[in-house]
Image (cartoon, rainbow, N blue to C red; front, side, top):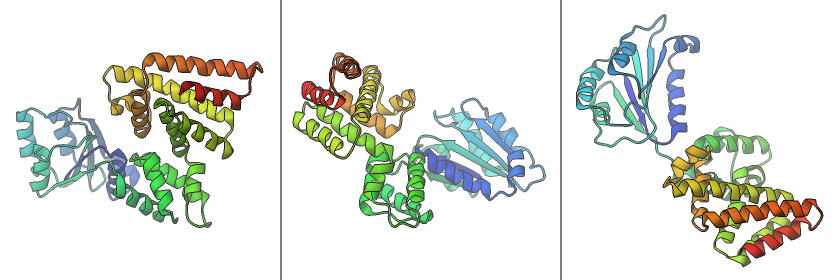
Length: 317
């Protein structure tokens, strides 16, 4: 049997693979009978050798091949695969993992759909109502409940990275265990992405020179009890990231590549990329230098952090 798992939702891919592996029997024997191949380096001969090997003291052999079809293979290779895969030994489970969606017309997709021993599944990043359904389902699986407002807040601010989303849901369900539904206040209190989103809103207002909204958002956070030094540290971090993203954007990198280069959450990279369009690189460096000057002024007693932030917001807009 051969499986084709393709698409950009890596978390669901790995979760489905784990479910498949779990059905193969004793974990120790499964590990002993598992071969992993780097599709970018492995040849067709390597693949056949791994698949044709008999399982050792087990019913099946597992072969996992990652990234073999990121580029369309040469026609002779595809032809050989089309001949070989339908004759795959019954004791072999071959799984192709592709991090990007393959075309519906891709020969491997067509083969998996038509062959008796083939299976194909597309894993696309969830968004909108589909993501909200996934959140409610995952909360329910962990014995919790969640309000529609909290669901929407998570979906909007964490986005479709299901690995991060799963971690946040785990945290929230443990926090609310036996104490009712997860609500929007719980999400705001416990999830750093929501806290960062408030800073995103503030920086958006600063970037668009909307002084009224920027001042309002700043005062709102202060009235909610936010420590001015925490707000300052978040703004320093935000403008440092803006400079880094601006430099990469000027090199014509798009948000997915920027996220990978800076090891940053994809949702965060997209938001910062949008914000960076409001500034020139020189402006960002000037603002960052001013933030560092603020730190010196506060530490030397020339001003307090609350006043410094008010003046900063008024001055930048």
